[in-house]
Length: 482
Image (cartoon, rainbow, N blue to C red):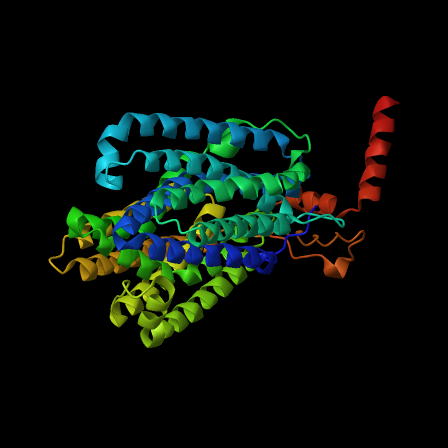
C-alpha cells in the first residue's frame, strides 16, 4: 500500500504557478498599454468569460480525476479506464458548449463583445484547450503521491505544464507589443494558444496513469460530477462576475471602468496564484488520507493552509495600503488608477476568497459535492443582493464581494469542521481477551448465587480447560458408541 503524504508537491507546483501568475500579470499589463482602456474593456470581458467557463466547467474534471486516480493508486489499481471516461465526458461537454455558443451568438456577442463574434470563437477554442489541460493535470496530481523510481514526478509534470503555458503567453504578448500591434484580437487568441502548446509539451507525462485496471463505471467519476461542475461554475462566477458587474452598472458608454477595475482586481489577487500551488495537491493528498482514515494528516494540512492564508492576506492588505496605487500605475500605466482603500478592500476579499478555496478542497475531498455547490450558489446570490445596495458602482461591487466571500467561508468552514470531527478513524486492532485459566482452584472460585445445581454445573463446565472438556466429550462419545 502506498504511503500517504501531505502536500509535499506544493513547492514544485508553486514554481510553475509563479511563472503562470507572472505571465497573466504581464499579459494583462502589456495588452492594457497596447490597446487602451476602451478596447481593454472587451479583453477584460473575454478574460472573465474564458476563465469562468474554462475553469468552472473543467476544473472539476481535474479534481475528480485526481481523486479517482489517487484512490486507485492506494488500492494498487491501474487508471486507464477512468482516464478514458473522463476524456469522453469532457469532450461531450466541449461539444455542448460549442452548440450553446452557436445558438446564443446573435444575442450575446453584442452586449458582451461590442458585436465582434471573433471573441466567441476564442472562447470556444480556449475552452477546448483548457479542458485538455485540466484533464492532464488531473492525471499528474492523481499519480504524484505514489510515484516511485527516477522518472519525472507528477508534480513536476504539473509544474512544467503551468510554466510552459505562462512562458508561451508571455513570449506571445511581448512579441505582439514589439511588433506594434494595438488591435485586441491577436492578444485574445493568446488565451487559446498558450494552453494548447503547454498540453502538447507535457502529454508524455500522462503515460504512467494509463496502466490497465478494473473497468471504471460512470459513477466512479460522475456520481458527483454534476454537483462539482455546478459548484465550480458558481465559484468562478463569484471570482469573475464583479468585473462584469462594474461594466453593466457603469453602462456601455463607460467600458473603461471595467478595464480599470480588472487591473485592480488582478493586482490584488496575485497571492491567489501562489495559493493555487497548495490547492492543486490538497484534494489528492486529503483523499489518500481519508481513504486510509488518517484524520490527523487531514487536520494538520487544513490548519497549515489556513495559517498561511491569514499571514498572506494581512501582508498583502498592508502592501496594498502602502504602495498599491503606485504599483497599479507602474504595472498597467498612468490611465489605470484606483483609490488606496479600494486596493486594501480587494486584498482582504482576496484573502477570504483563498480561505473559501481551502474549505472547498476539503469539502470535495470528503465527497460533499452537493453542499459545496450550495455554498457557492449562496455566495453568488449574496453577491447579487449586495449589488442592490444604493452605493456608487465600485464601492457597491466591493461590498457585494465581501458579503459573498463571508457567506461562503462561513457555510463551507462550519460544514468542513463538522465533517472532519466525524471522519472515520484508522482501523486499530482490538486488545486480545485474556485467556481463561486452565485450572481453577477452590479458593479462587466465585461465590455463586443460590440458583440450584444447574448453574453450578454450568459454571464448572465453563471453567474447565479446552483439553479437559475435549477429553470428557471423547470419553462420552466412546461410551455411547460402545
